[in-house]
Image 1 (cartoon, rainbow, N blue to C red):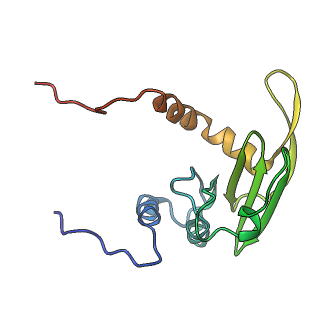
Image 2: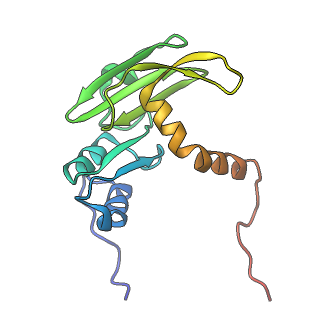
Length: 157
């Protein structure tokens, strides 16, 4: 039964509350959770780590709890910087554009990867792990974004 809007504390995001509610069956079991920048934040990653869930995901540059030394840094192509905020590593890496990540799974480091054409390239370990785990989901989101529709669903009469 609907009982009105939920009470949200001033310092708590709605998406944090949603993720914590959806993850309830997996808490305290040592799972790994990958999330995109819509949901991810340093605060949420810390909360989930306290509940024995490791996280990895892209991060919006504008989140208020991001380390200032990371988001204010001007990066050159291929440059990788990171900082630790509490128990969460926050990193920035520039490939074609700046990529911000928050992870509790790996210590940020550059690794050498080989693409499908055999070309070697360095990439942060947290980006590589995220891409391996989320490539299908991100690709689906990308494909859907190409098609604008005035109506996402319709009623059949």
